Image (tube, rainbow, N blue to C red):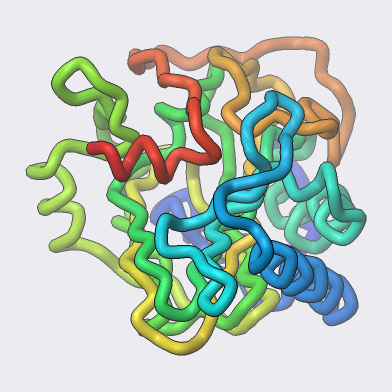
Length: 291
C-alpha cells in the first residue's frame, strides 16, 4: 500500500487487515444503496422461478444466472449472478462509488481498478457449499494487492452459511487448485482439513462488508436456516497490478479505475502459481462440484 491518508478506515483497522488478511466493517453502503441492491436481487429471484436451468447471457456467452440443480418455482435456487454491474444500475453504482470502494482504496490504494463482480446467494434450504480455496490462483496478477469485497446484502449469521476464513493464511503458501490433472477450484482434502481446524466465521448485519486479501484461505457451509444469505462480491486490484490470466467474470467495467488515476506502470512480485482453468459453465461452483 502506498503511503496515504486513510479516507474511511482507522489505522488500527488497516493494520488488522494486513495482519489477518480479513476485516469486517459495518455500513459499507448507504441505506438507499442497500435497499436498491436487495430490490434488484429479489426481482431476479422471482424471475428465476420461471426458468428450468441456468439462463441469460454474460459478455463471454456463459449464463449470467446460475441455478442449483434442486431449483424449482416453489423453492428457487438462484445461487450466482455473474457481473450484476452489467444489468443493474444499483450494483454498478456501489461497485464504482461507495464507502466500500473507499475502504479498499485505504488498503491497496490510492489507485485501484475494478476487476470483476458477482453475487453469491444461499437461499433458504440451499445446498451450495463453497470448498476451501484462495482467490489468487483464480485471478493471478503481477502482484497480490487485490481485495475481495464481500458486501452482505442480507444479514449473515452463524446458521445461514457464513464465510469462514483462516486469519493470517494470506502470508503462507499459494495452494494448488489442480488435482489429478484437473482444475477443481479447491485445495487438497488434507489442506482443507487443516484450514477447517483454524476456521473463523465472519458475521455482520446487512450493509456490512468483509474485506478479504486475495490469498486468504476461505470457504463456507450450506445455509441451514430459513434466512437468505446473499453476498455481492466485487474484486479490486491495485492499479499497478497487471492481470496474468483472462478475467473469469468479464464485464463492461473491466479494468476501470474507480479510485485514483491510471499509474501507467506495472509492479511485479516474485511468486509461482499454476495457470487457472477458465470456467466453462455458469460458475466455479460447477468446477468445485466435480471435484
